[in-house]
Every structure is written in structure tokens, then in C-alpha cells.
Image 1 (spheres, rainbow, N blue to C red):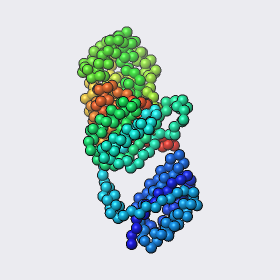
Image 2 (cartoon, rainbow, N blue to C red; image 1 turned 180 degrees about the horizontal axis):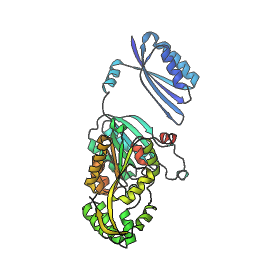
Image 3 (cartoon, rainbow, N blue to C red; image 1 turned 45 degrees about the horizontal axis):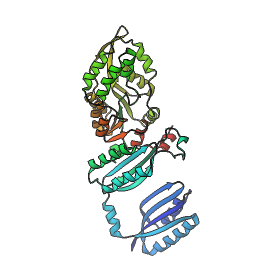
Image 4 (cartoon, rainbow, N blue to C red; image 1 turned 90 degrees about the vertical axis):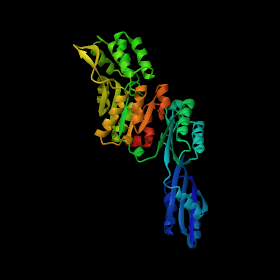
Length: 406
């Protein structure tokens, strides 16, 4: 007679525990139907569901019990009925989702609120994984600390849009970041990532820097803010701002480029993305001069931005070619994907302004980064609490992997 037995092992973790216990199952030719293991602060939690026959099941449990005692771990046996097992098998193939939460510090409240919504949506958490390194007890021990936890969730949300809205509301109200992604093949093999430049890769709007040098800073900043909030058309605002730069010396651009304030986490993120084989693009409503500077600094593959007209070493107040606005960014993302033979579902876009919304909506994964309110309300994924390397956690990278592959 067939018997199905679930064993749960817990206790202090040490090398060889799993090997010793599975060796006993192998001795009796038991078939392992499911297995899972986790280690939390040197404490092992191991579960094995195996199939055997009634004539040897008693011997197996006796040997496992003695071995567990010898290893200093606790073991518990639970018989599983065949109809229970068959019901579990029938759940196979249901949609899976990845929920990633991150911030400077994650609290029990953050996790409770997120998992409450998972339960409300009639979904089940299969596994929980910490992606960041171990946290210090004292916050000042690690400047700019990061904490990230990833949940693998099974089932179909009762209301996906309501779930997404709830997560964005929680992130805004409780000061943490969250991502909800369907766990598809494409989610695991992203290949192209496109960044806005100003206020995303760098912590400034370059046109504002140029305007300060030209003595029209207040005028240009006011127009920039209205454009980023989506209150005026980007192309109209761009033309107005560039016109105010007329007469500025070209040398000012070089001085600004050499002192660009790089956003927290960009160096780390770029190193990891390049090692992982990603193609990287800048799609910016800013200027090619500064995009090309970043291209050389970080080994970026593509730069598409706006070209300022320069005559006799002076800005003319005009631009050359087509304006890279929101619509153009989305078109360029699709074009680069075609050139690189990348499915659009394998693309990522990151930006902060209203002119980034078409690009964020087009990409397989659109991430609003320290974004304006209108952008944050529209985006499905948002990072507002940590640096740009937070993108890596939304892609499933772990600190242990990042460190070990330097």
C-alpha cells in the first residue's frame, strides 16, 4: 500500500543535515515528491514530502527519528491523504507573482500590511526571501542602509488593479517601495533597460544648471517644473527654455558635465547590469552632450537626447533635429528592442517625469524613480526611498550574488 508522509525538520543548521536525512530515504528507495528548505539566523527549517510503501514506512520513520536525535534537530511526521495530494497537484500551473518590498528599513508593519492584501486577494505565499545583506542593529552602523524582501505568491488576484492601487497607496503612506510583477519567463530574462537622465541618473536638471550660468535660472526652473508635472506640453516648454540659453559659452557645458551629481546607487547598478549582459540606453529630454559624458563614464550602449545648436562656440538658443519628448522616448525604446532582437516584455524603463510616462507604459517593466506625483500615481512600480540600485532588487538580484560576482 502506498503511503505519503510529510516530514518537517527544525533546529540548529549545520553542514550535512539534509544529506544525512535524504540518505535514509534513498536507502529505502523512497520517492521525494516535494522539498523545501530555509535557513534563518542559523536555524534550519526543512520540509520533505515523500512516497513509500506501508511495509517500509515504519522503518524509515524510525531511522529518521534516530538520525534527527543524533543531529540535534527536531522532526515531525504528518501522513498525507492521496486526495489531499491530488488536490495540491491540481493547483499546479496557477499564476505566480513576485512582490518586492524595499526601503531603508522594513518593519513588521510593512510586511503585515502587504501580506494582509495578499490574503484579501485570496492568494497564497509560497516563499519569502531576503535579497539584501544582513542588517546592523544600530542604523548608524551602515550609512544609507537598504532592506529588501521578495515574496513568491501563487494564485490569481481577485482584483489585480485594486491590489496594485492598494500597494501604491501603502508605499506612499508608509514610506517604503513595492513592486508587483507576474512571474513569467520574461520577468526572469530582462535584456534592455532604458533610463531617463535628468533627475534619474543625475540629481539635477541640466537645463536648469545651464540657465543658472546664463542668468535665467528662475525663468527656466519655473517652466521645467510645469513641464515635469505635465501642466504644459513638453515640446513647447523645451523650445521656450532653450531659447533662453542663447549666447551661453560652450565651455560651460564641459564644466557642468565634469561636475554632474550622480544619483545614489548608479555606479553599483551599472556595474551589475553590465556584468549581467544588459543593454543600457539613455532616452532623455535633456541634451546629448551630457548623455555622451555618462555613456563614456558607465559604458552605456545607446544615448538619444536633444542636440543644442552651437555656432562659434556659443549656444544659439535653437536645437538641431527632432525633440525627444515622451512619445519619442517610447518609440526609441521599441526601436532599440527591435535592433537588439529583444521582446518588448524583456525591457525596463526608469524615469521621473511626465514625459517618461509613455516609455514607462511601453516597457515590460516601468519604474517611476523619485517621481513627480502624477507619474507616481500612474506607474505600477515605484522607487522613492532608496537609490537607483533599488532597480536591481525589482529584477531579483540578491546582495550575496552582487558581492560574489565582483
